[in-house]
Amino acid sequence: MSKDNTSSNPAAKLWGGRFSEATDAFVERFTASVTFDQRMALEDIQGSLAHAQMLSEVGVLTEDEFRQIAGGLKGIAAEIEAGEFPWSVQLEDVHMNIEARLTDRIGATGKKLHTGRSRNDQVATDIRLWLRGRIDRIAAELTRLQSGLVELAEREADTIMPGFTHLQSAQPVTFGHHLLAWNEMLQRDFERLRDCRVRVNRSPLGAAALAGTSYPIDRARTAELLGFDAPTENSLDSVSDRDFAIEFCAFAALLLTHLSRASEELVLWASSQFDFIDLPDRFCTGSSIMPQKKNPDVPELVRGKTGRVNGHLVALLTLMKSQPLAYNKDNQEDKEPLFDAADTALDCLRAFADMVPALKAKRENMLAAAGKGFSTATDLADYLVRRGVAFRDAHEIVGQSVSFAIEQQKDLAELTLAQLRQFSDQIGEDVFEVLTLEGSVAARDHIGGTAPNQVRAACVRARELLGKR
Image 1 (cartoon, rainbow, N blue to C red):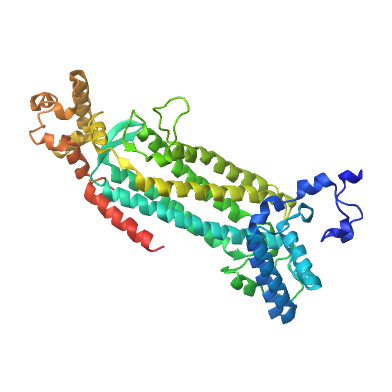
Image 2 (image 1 turned 60 degrees about the vertical axis):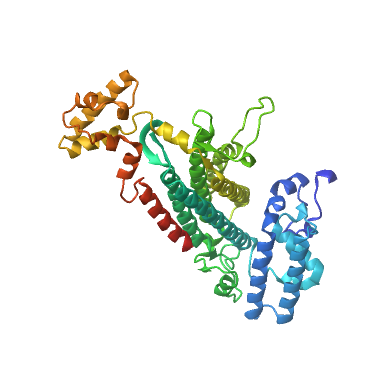
């Protein structure tokens, strides 16, 4: 092997005692993770401080040794936060970079920090600490988005728009009711995220490489110091489990799926063909060739990023599917998908939380669209049923009425009483009360219905849930 292809002396590695040949330079770069796992540096220091404190409390380290290690680690944290830390690919990962720097700063005492632990339980702890922090930030953005949605829904509780099935006009609904449907999706996402956090918040620290350690460690103490609910139960599982990362990515994939569905509707509604809403200019861009264009780039990008997050979920599932217990180098590939899924979810939520409350409904356009497509046909059928007509017969009568209205190029509400009565003598003068859009939405006056007073009541309940977080 040529000198150019050879890394530093194996003795320079913190694990190099068993090796007689230096690592190939390409292999060193190929196997290193410090370029991406350094973002867990502060969590790594947090975990090391807790481990060192516990070691001093059980007598493995002296109080003076703990003070030296704690002072050194805090100094390193300051270097990292100031952007002055000398990261090295030769030291492979965030853990060995920090440990080597600690020894540089405080001498041989720094070499005692790793007593009773392994990089295997160390990295598992760091990821959980990092993800727990991201979960809390995502939960805050989810809450901000839902609060904005509920506020907008209440403001638009009386705004009538067409409700669709198969993207065909079906029945009139209120815009507030539609927005609260989005909120229900996000509420389930929040519950999944909260549930995921429970399983993230377990401490693997002390599981060591795979079998635990012979030192008299106190795992419950390090769990307490790090704010975990409890230590993990089995050392083999502790170092090899990435279920929590997969579960988070499953949450993120569902969240992005919901945001993508909302994005698709925003894109449609902002088009000149629908013209239901106005997106503020700050969330749109223009065309380099067509000066009239106002492109809904933010919702389009959120829609596009959904595929990216879905891919991360599949990547992690595939990563874990064939791994024997316990830790394997494969698990180095867990971080980039997880990091990007968390970053993408957070960014998309921030974009939506900023954008949604600023939407402006074009109420006249929505109302006019709701009046097309015979959206009150079901109300006419219900009217006939209340007058004693069997539903299937009522369905046929209304179908014939719609067919006639199409020939006349009129809506049902525009037909005369005589024209309607040719299909059923059960139709009376009061029929026009149910054929109005306002009458249609007001009639859905039950929990979960689109009636304006039900929308306002649902907003109250949604705020109560948000207030309990």
